[in-house]
Image 1: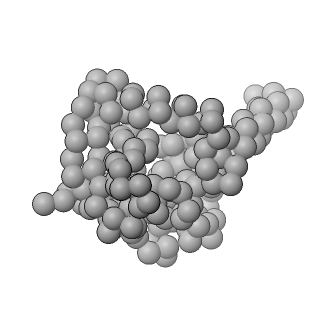
Image 2 (image 1 turned 180 degrees about the horizontal axis):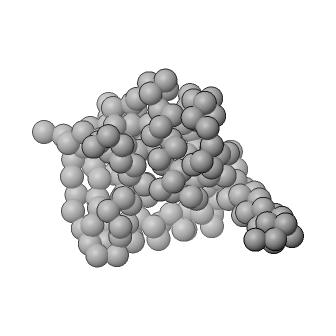
Length: 170
């Protein structure tokens, strides 16, 4: 790759990252992103269309009491599965999960499973965040790192991005 094409690539990536951040200004999706999320919910819950690491998280809304759905990427680490909040602790799904005591459901590949989400302390999140960014490149503008960043950089941002271990709910 030439120096000029490398610079063009960085400019394009920076523009995409800025657009992505604007679509979630204030930690909430704008109208276009809400539409895209609704489409993702349909695709991620479909039996054959969705890869195993994408799903729909369903949790009772803390204010409405109705089931709220959010598209999520499931990150594997050390034979366990995790959910990461790219938007931080104030994301609606995070606050709903916390209000519900971790009780939720995952709908993936046409099947729904009741789960219990356990929040991981920030000092244990760094490697999970790194794997999450490798799996979900669309989250990179929100975390501000690439998956190749040094682990101390992930430790630095870990307090701002809740991570939940997925347990099967009996």
